[in-house]
Image (cartoon, rainbow, N blue to C red; front, side):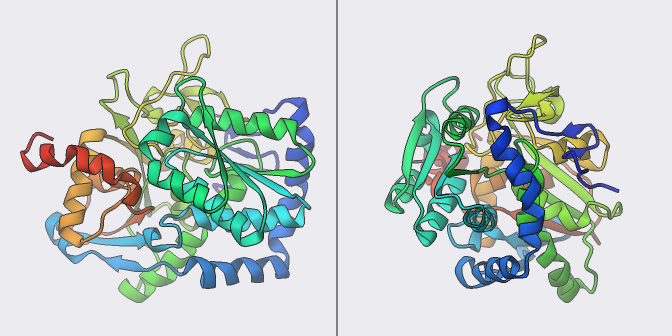
Length: 398
């Protein structure tokens, strides 16, 4: 049985490794999150907003031309069609309602690609709450459209200037803020990472993805179960949601696709399943890229949402136990997959999501299989990257 235990562990991964100053914040949340989520009034408001504001259910689309090319049956779970353009809003809607019930007056968040930052700024505008988003200085440059969106929505975007100036460093800054503002501030973590109860709470809010997939697949194919679910994994929130209702269905393959960057062993990678060892990052025990003496290795990916040196504890357990299969995809192959999907199906995917599509070229499957890919976000934010590499694609240089 794959589930989180009362201490926040999935097998040997998880827990809450936090400084004493954070204990009251995390403990308050741990004691109340399940009770609040199970309240009838909470569920009604959460599902009303998912339906009327986010635009759920998101479609499950049979990609006929893609299926023909790969000689199998490929369905796309269209999280890119949600309000704000990605799956992230499923979680931020849930967490802003949680924050209100805990009496919090101010919201902070971290963001990599900017999708979680936009989703957080969006729900803060909806609820009239001040919002500060921490974002790596490098990511602010490469994800400029999302930075503009956040600011237009009223959020203050604060650059993280330390370390690699990417997602890891933005998370460090957000945690520092939370320590300094423990009473009135709620930290909306965007991925299935961090100290318990965050990985479980985020997975539960994102589980609407696989909940819908079940009845949508039943309508399309006559069975609620696919043969495989594919999702990209940085920290792992879209994958946690796409896998959630299939975790204990061993005949459903779970494919976790991570960023190999310029090559797994190139020194510029974020392939945690291969390069990672057991350790603690951002409050939980998981797999992370680190030196022998425990210093975190800087990750690299062209995709701002996947260049994280760790992985959520649920995914660490799924991979270590053999329940999930990890596939590592390079920048180059992800770019090819993005251009290919755009021309095959008229859908421009986020660069993160493109990694999941590239997995089709390396995994094994049968022609009768039903494969669901979680199309976690749209590619508007990555257009500059796509434009910069377009000539290489056209000329066959990719």
